Structure formats: structure tokens, C-alpha cells
Amino acid sequence: MSEHPDIAGNIDAILNRIGKAAQASGRSSDAVELVAVSKRQPETRIDAALAAGQRVFGENRVQEAQAHWAGRRAHYADLELRLIGPLQTNKAADAVALFDVIETVDRLKLARILAREMETQGRRPRLYVQINTGAEPQKAGLLPQELEGFISEARDTLGLAFEGLMCIPPVEEPAGLHFALLAKLARENGLEKLSMGMSADYEVAIGLGATSVRVGTGVFGARDVAT
Ligand SMILES: *Cc1c(COP(=O)(O)O)cnc(C)c1O
View 1: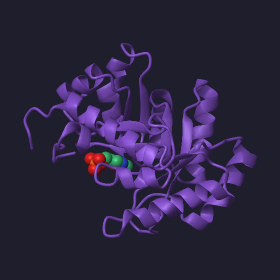
View 2 (view 1 turned 60 degrees about the vertical axis):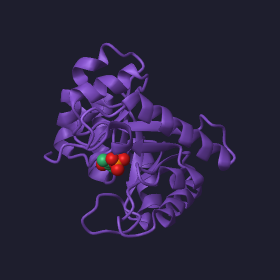
View 3 (view 1 turned 135 degrees about the horizontal axis):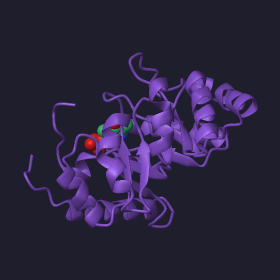
View 4 (view 1 turned 90 degrees about the horizontal axis):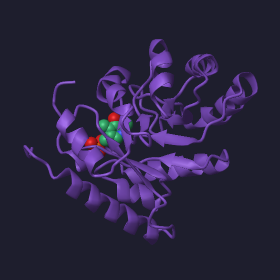
């Protein structure tokens, strides 16, 4: 791990590759958003990414996200924070208060509490449904066949609408199969956004329709091992 990763240089190179991959799939070079995943990264690197102009960040834990962003929020009006990790219902209020996008809605109990919190706080983060495309027992997310019923129940009983889908493919399988499945599910359910692709496979994801990619180590360098 490099002591001082060139974060501005990394972002520049990734945006360039994102633009090329988007064009190669027939979209404009700015069609795909870079979500810089700042979990378990030192404060200095986060500041370097902000200085380089990056404004969209992903975090996978509510408490760590608060530590990283509660103070910085006030200084960056155009900041966009995305929750990309599992959300426990007892953290839902904090998540609604902090995040602009919650990508990991995956059960009705959570959807119900989010709906109530959004009502109470008058804040409406955009919502994605996380899909467990590989049906892995240890992984969060709805099974693909549960999506349609989930969307209609959340709409009819809670008045919730979803903007898109998110997935984390199984590590041991070709990611492209999972990205293609996610894109198909989004099409079938009339959802526009696809959060898929990480440092190792974001160009593959863009080729299959990603509208945002979640890149951590590619932007910031290796993370702290401890969580
Ligand atoms: C950590 C994380 C990422 C970023 O992974 P990298 O391999 O560092 O790019 C993307 N998505 C989710 C859900 C993550 O937890």
C-alpha cells in the first residue's frame, strides 16, 4: 500500500476510463457516476478527494459515515452521500438524516421504518433495492424473484418508490452474469438506475448498463484492515 496515493490522479484516470466505457456502450461520457467509497479510509485521503472535486461518496456503515461526513457536510453544499452497506432498523433514523441515497433497502420491515422516518424528518433520500443476485445465504439483498412483489407492496402500502437496483456479485463468479441479471430486473420493473461495479470490474458493469459505479481502493488506495 502506498503511503501517499495520488488521489487526484486516480480519480482523473478512473473518470477517463468510465467515460470511455460509457461511450463504448453507446452512452455519453458523463452518463455514469463515480461513487468514491470512503469506508475505512483516513481523513487526509477524503480531504484529497474533495480537493480533487469529487462530491459523491459511498459508505457502508452509518456510524463511520457520520464520523467522516457530519462535519464536512456543511462545507460542501453539493455533496452526495450514499449508503452502500446493510442497514439495521435501529440505524434507519440516522441513515435518513445523513444520506442522500440509500442503496441497500432489502426488506419490508426496513422499508416501513424508512417510510416513517422520511415522513417524520421531512427528508427523502432516494432509494435503491439491493438484490442478492447470487442467492448467497450470508449476503444481504432480496432474491430476484422477490423483487416485483416487494416493489408493489412498498408502493401500495407505504407509498415508497425506488429509483434503482444495486448488487454485489459473488466473488467467485464472473461478475458480468450478475450485472446482466440486475439490468434485466431493472428493465422488467421499470427502474432507471443501476449501482453495480467496483474497482476490479466497473468497466464490465458499465458495458452492461451501470449508471453508477462504487470504487474504493481504485480511488483511495488500500483500506485499513481493521474495521
Ligand atoms: C467496499 C465496497 C465497495 C468498494 O470496493 P473496492 O473494491 O474497494 O472498489 C463497493 N461496494 C460496496 C458495497 C462495498 O462495500
